[in-house]
Image 1: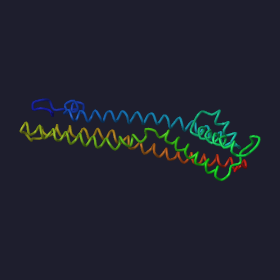
Image 2: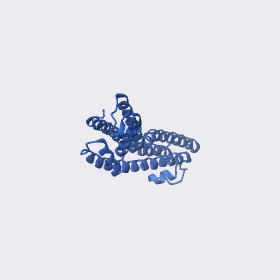
Image 3: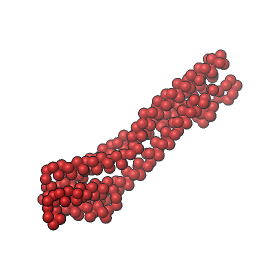
Image 4: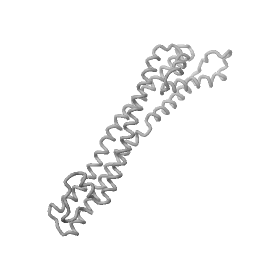
Length: 235
């Protein structure tokens, strides 16, 4: 229920929340939970993006001096695990899988036909998707929180307004001092929802852009691996 007649009028946001109705408190509690989840994802993914950028950058710097796919595989084995090392390992695993069917004696380098090159590209694409999904895990939750929070705030506002008008009807007074606390309580839910939604939506767009850039970098790296095969005369 809203502040009753004769009770102290809330003068701070904390007092307003403490004196708010039960439905408003429930909505605010849900928004607090969503905010904690949102910030946990934001901080965790920031550290993950930072770690991936560091390990990938070190690998790519060393990859510039690689001349063969075997050298790239050796580099991947001695480097810190990263999306690029896993992609390289998957490419080498594919080449080893097709070697027994290549018809080449002596275990020498396999020369790939057009169908095998296309199969290699598809294997790399599947690995790219897996790596992007791995890095992008939980990021869509930020979009969900950013979309759901304003609706939760709107629900709290509507419930607060209903509670305010119910209290006015019960007290039989429509002056400003009777209306203002209830309206302020109702708007608190909207303000809390915006505080939750704005960072979630903003960071989601930032992280989505980084994921798209990462996806493009993986595509370029896959093209480099295929180019290594071409330079070795294996295509």
